[in-house]
Amino acid sequence: MTDAFQPSMLKYDAQGLIPAILQDATSGEVLMLGYMNEETLVRTLEIGQAVFWSRSRQEIWHKGATSGDYVRVLSIATDCDADAIVLQVEPLGGGVCHTGARSCFVEGEAGGEPRLVALVAPSAE
Amino acid sequence: MTDAFQPSMLKYDAQGLIPAILQDATSGEVLMLGYMNEETLVRTLEIGQAVFWSRSRQEIWHKGATSGDYVRVLSIATDCDADAIVLQVEPLGGGVCHTGARSCFVEGEAGGEPRLVALVAPSAE
Image (cartoon, rainbow over all chains, first blue to last red; front, side, top):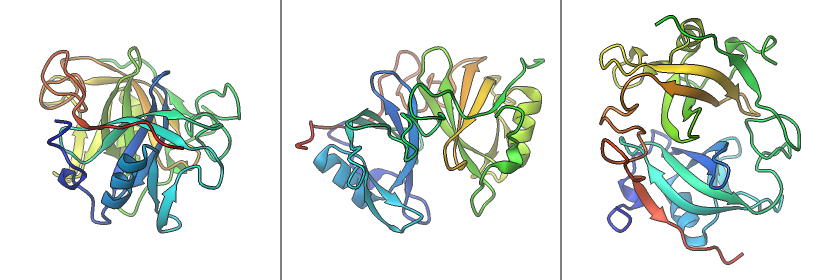
Protein backbone atom coordinates (compact mmCIF):
# COMPACT_ATOMS: atom_id res chain seq x y z
CA MET A 1 0.00 0.00 0.00
CA THR A 2 2.74 2.46 0.85
CA ASP A 3 4.06 2.58 -2.68
CA ALA A 4 0.74 2.14 -4.41
CA PHE A 5 -1.28 4.72 -2.53
CA GLN A 6 -1.00 8.34 -3.54
CA PRO A 7 -2.66 11.49 -2.16
CA SER A 8 -4.52 11.77 -5.47
CA MET A 9 -6.32 8.51 -4.70
CA LEU A 10 -8.00 9.87 -1.58
CA LYS A 11 -11.53 11.24 -1.69
CA TYR A 12 -11.76 14.95 -1.02
CA ASP A 13 -15.04 16.69 -0.28
CA ALA A 14 -16.77 19.39 -2.32
CA GLN A 15 -14.29 21.91 -0.93
CA GLY A 16 -11.38 19.66 -1.86
CA LEU A 17 -10.69 18.78 1.76
CA ILE A 18 -10.19 15.60 3.75
CA PRO A 19 -10.42 15.44 7.56
CA ALA A 20 -7.06 14.62 9.15
CA ILE A 21 -6.95 13.21 12.68
CA LEU A 22 -3.68 13.80 14.53
CA GLN A 23 -2.90 11.04 17.01
CA ASP A 24 0.10 11.17 19.33
CA ALA A 25 2.25 8.25 18.21
CA THR A 26 3.51 7.66 21.75
CA SER A 27 0.48 8.17 23.98
CA GLY A 28 -2.25 7.37 21.47
CA GLU A 29 -4.09 10.55 22.45
CA VAL A 30 -6.15 12.23 19.75
CA LEU A 31 -4.62 15.71 19.50
CA MET A 32 -6.69 17.55 16.92
CA LEU A 33 -8.80 17.27 13.82
CA GLY A 34 -7.68 19.42 10.92
CA TYR A 35 -8.34 19.50 7.20
CA MET A 36 -5.94 18.99 4.32
CA ASN A 37 -6.33 19.36 0.60
CA GLU A 38 -4.25 17.38 -1.87
CA GLU A 39 -1.65 20.12 -2.05
CA THR A 40 -1.10 20.35 1.70
CA LEU A 41 -1.09 16.56 2.04
CA VAL A 42 1.65 16.35 -0.58
CA ARG A 43 3.51 19.12 1.26
CA THR A 44 3.08 17.22 4.54
CA LEU A 45 4.69 14.17 2.96
CA GLU A 46 7.50 16.28 1.53
CA ILE A 47 8.54 17.99 4.75
CA GLY A 48 7.41 15.39 7.28
CA GLN A 49 5.44 17.99 9.23
CA ALA A 50 1.71 18.63 9.36
CA VAL A 51 0.49 21.19 6.84
CA PHE A 52 -3.22 21.95 6.79
CA TRP A 53 -5.71 24.02 4.88
CA SER A 54 -7.13 26.64 7.21
CA ARG A 55 -10.86 26.82 6.56
CA SER A 56 -11.23 30.01 8.59
CA ARG A 57 -8.40 31.86 6.88
CA GLN A 58 -8.71 30.05 3.53
CA GLU A 59 -4.98 29.58 3.25
CA ILE A 60 -2.25 27.00 3.63
CA TRP A 61 -1.36 26.55 7.27
CA HIS A 62 2.01 25.03 8.11
CA LYS A 63 1.31 24.24 11.72
CA GLY A 64 3.97 25.79 13.95
CA ALA A 65 5.12 28.39 11.44
CA THR A 66 4.05 31.15 13.79
CA SER A 67 3.93 29.36 17.16
CA GLY A 68 6.98 27.16 16.77
CA ASP A 69 4.81 24.20 17.69
CA TYR A 70 5.56 22.09 14.62
CA VAL A 71 4.15 18.58 14.43
CA ARG A 72 6.31 15.79 13.01
CA VAL A 73 4.37 13.23 11.00
CA LEU A 74 5.52 9.62 11.21
CA SER A 75 2.87 7.87 9.14
CA ILE A 76 -0.48 8.45 7.49
CA ALA A 77 -3.27 5.88 7.18
CA THR A 78 -6.57 6.15 5.35
CA ASP A 79 -9.88 4.57 6.21
CA CYS A 80 -11.91 2.06 4.17
CA ASP A 81 -13.65 4.81 2.19
CA ALA A 82 -10.46 6.83 1.63
CA ASP A 83 -12.26 9.92 2.89
CA ALA A 84 -10.50 10.38 6.24
CA ILE A 85 -6.90 9.99 7.39
CA VAL A 86 -5.14 9.39 10.70
CA LEU A 87 -1.66 10.80 11.15
CA GLN A 88 0.67 9.32 13.74
CA VAL A 89 2.55 12.34 15.01
CA GLU A 90 5.12 13.67 17.43
CA PRO A 91 4.60 17.26 18.63
CA LEU A 92 7.90 19.10 18.30
CA GLY A 93 7.07 22.16 20.36
CA GLY A 94 4.59 22.89 23.10
CA GLY A 95 0.99 21.84 22.99
CA VAL A 96 -0.70 21.15 19.70
CA CYS A 97 -3.74 23.28 20.57
CA HIS A 98 -3.71 27.05 20.07
CA THR A 99 -4.71 27.29 23.75
CA GLY A 100 -1.37 25.74 24.70
CA ALA A 101 -2.97 22.47 25.71
CA ARG A 102 -1.31 19.26 24.54
CA SER A 103 -4.53 18.36 22.72
CA CYS A 104 -7.45 20.37 21.39
CA PHE A 105 -9.69 17.90 23.23
CA VAL A 106 -8.40 18.73 26.72
CA GLU A 107 -8.61 21.86 28.83
CA GLY A 108 -5.78 23.84 30.36
CA GLU A 109 -2.14 24.04 29.41
CA ALA A 110 -0.72 21.04 31.23
CA GLY A 111 -2.22 17.76 32.33
CA GLY A 112 -5.63 18.86 31.21
CA GLU A 113 -8.73 16.79 31.46
CA PRO A 114 -11.01 16.06 28.48
CA ARG A 115 -13.40 18.84 27.43
CA LEU A 116 -16.31 16.60 28.29
CA VAL A 117 -19.60 16.96 26.54
CA ALA A 118 -20.90 14.01 28.48
CA LEU A 119 -20.17 10.88 30.37
CA VAL A 120 -22.59 8.34 29.02
CA ALA A 121 -24.57 5.92 31.11
CA PRO A 122 -24.33 2.22 30.25
CA SER A 123 -26.75 1.27 27.49
CA ALA A 124 -29.69 -0.97 28.06
CA GLU A 125 -28.95 -3.29 25.13
CA MET B 1 -18.32 20.94 31.83
CA THR B 2 -20.34 17.74 31.93
CA ASP B 3 -23.43 19.44 33.23
CA ALA B 4 -22.95 22.72 31.42
CA PHE B 5 -22.23 21.43 27.96
CA GLN B 6 -25.11 20.47 25.72
CA PRO B 7 -25.23 19.10 22.17
CA SER B 8 -26.86 22.40 21.12
CA MET B 9 -23.67 24.24 22.06
CA LEU B 10 -21.54 22.41 19.51
CA LYS B 11 -20.83 23.92 16.12
CA TYR B 12 -22.36 21.99 13.26
CA ASP B 13 -21.37 22.60 9.64
CA ALA B 14 -23.56 23.88 6.81
CA GLN B 15 -25.14 20.42 6.56
CA GLY B 16 -25.80 20.40 10.29
CA LEU B 17 -23.08 17.81 10.92
CA ILE B 18 -20.12 17.45 13.24
CA PRO B 19 -17.28 14.95 12.68
CA ALA B 20 -17.21 12.28 15.38
CA ILE B 21 -14.02 10.31 15.98
CA LEU B 22 -14.51 6.90 17.58
CA GLN B 23 -11.58 5.87 19.74
CA ASP B 24 -11.37 2.46 21.42
CA ALA B 25 -11.45 3.28 25.13
CA THR B 26 -9.21 0.32 25.94
CA SER B 27 -6.61 0.22 23.17
CA GLY B 28 -6.69 3.89 22.18
CA GLU B 29 -6.99 2.91 18.53
CA VAL B 30 -8.91 5.27 16.27
CA LEU B 31 -11.72 3.10 14.90
CA MET B 32 -13.63 5.34 12.53
CA LEU B 33 -14.70 8.85 11.66
CA GLY B 34 -18.42 9.36 11.31
CA TYR B 35 -20.77 12.31 11.29
CA MET B 36 -23.53 13.23 13.71
CA ASN B 37 -26.15 15.92 13.69
CA GLU B 38 -27.65 17.31 16.86
CA GLU B 39 -30.50 14.81 16.75
CA THR B 40 -28.26 11.75 16.46
CA LEU B 41 -25.89 13.10 19.11
CA VAL B 42 -28.81 13.50 21.50
CA ARG B 43 -29.94 9.99 20.59
CA THR B 44 -26.38 8.69 21.20
CA LEU B 45 -26.48 10.19 24.68
CA GLU B 46 -29.91 8.73 25.34
CA ILE B 47 -29.11 5.14 24.42
CA GLY B 48 -25.36 5.06 25.12
CA GLN B 49 -24.61 3.71 21.66
CA ALA B 50 -23.22 5.47 18.61
CA VAL B 51 -25.88 6.86 16.28
CA PHE B 52 -24.69 8.68 13.18
CA TRP B 53 -26.11 10.57 10.26
CA SER B 54 -25.34 8.62 7.09
CA ARG B 55 -24.25 11.13 4.47
CA SER B 56 -24.47 8.53 1.68
CA ARG B 57 -27.96 7.35 2.57
CA GLN B 58 -29.11 10.67 4.07
CA GLU B 59 -30.71 8.96 7.04
CA ILE B 60 -30.19 8.23 10.70
CA TRP B 61 -27.80 5.33 11.14
CA HIS B 62 -27.87 3.47 14.44
CA LYS B 63 -24.59 1.66 14.05
CA GLY B 64 -25.09 -2.07 14.49
CA ALA B 65 -28.82 -2.06 13.78
CA THR B 66 -28.29 -4.28 10.76
CA SER B 67 -24.88 -5.84 11.48
CA GLY B 68 -25.26 -6.36 15.22
CA ASP B 69 -21.98 -4.54 15.70
CA TYR B 70 -23.23 -1.90 18.10
CA VAL B 71 -20.77 0.52 19.64
CA ARG B 72 -21.12 1.48 23.31
CA VAL B 73 -20.22 5.09 24.05
CA LEU B 74 -18.53 5.81 27.37
CA SER B 75 -17.80 9.51 27.04
CA ILE B 76 -17.79 12.34 24.54
CA ALA B 77 -15.31 15.22 24.46
CA THR B 78 -15.27 18.26 22.22
CA ASP B 79 -12.30 20.20 20.91
CA CYS B 80 -11.39 23.83 21.56
CA ASP B 81 -13.55 25.08 18.68
CA ALA B 82 -16.50 22.82 19.54
CA ASP B 83 -16.58 21.63 15.92
CA ALA B 84 -15.30 18.08 16.38
CA ILE B 85 -15.88 15.39 19.00
CA VAL B 86 -14.03 12.31 20.20
CA LEU B 87 -16.06 9.43 21.58
CA GLN B 88 -14.46 6.88 23.87
CA VAL B 89 -16.14 3.65 22.87
CA GLU B 90 -16.34 -0.09 23.38
CA PRO B 91 -17.30 -2.16 20.32
CA LEU B 92 -20.05 -4.57 21.36
CA GLY B 93 -19.98 -6.85 18.34
CA GLY B 94 -17.40 -7.68 15.73
CA GLY B 95 -15.28 -5.11 14.00
CA VAL B 96 -16.42 -1.52 13.73
CA CYS B 97 -15.67 -1.34 10.00
CA HIS B 98 -18.17 -2.59 7.44
CA THR B 99 -15.30 -4.72 6.08
CA GLY B 100 -15.26 -6.62 9.35
CA ALA B 101 -11.98 -5.07 10.43
CA ARG B 102 -11.71 -3.84 14.00
CA SER B 103 -11.04 -0.33 12.66
CA CYS B 104 -11.80 1.42 9.39
CA PHE B 105 -8.14 2.43 9.33
CA VAL B 106 -6.77 -1.12 9.16
CA GLU B 107 -6.98 -3.81 6.51
CA GLY B 108 -8.29 -7.33 6.87
CA GLU B 109 -10.68 -8.80 9.36
CA ALA B 110 -8.34 -9.64 12.24
CA GLY B 111 -5.07 -8.19 13.39
CA GLY B 112 -4.96 -5.92 10.39
CA GLU B 113 -2.21 -3.46 9.66
CA PRO B 114 -2.87 0.24 9.01
CA ARG B 115 -4.10 1.16 5.53
CA LEU B 116 -0.94 3.15 4.98
CA VAL B 117 -0.89 6.11 2.68
CA ALA B 118 2.70 6.72 3.61
CA LEU B 119 5.46 6.28 6.08
CA VAL B 120 7.03 9.70 6.39
CA ALA B 121 10.73 10.38 6.43
CA PRO B 122 12.12 12.42 9.33
CA SER B 123 11.73 16.13 8.74
CA ALA B 124 14.72 18.40 8.17
CA GLU B 125 13.57 21.02 10.70
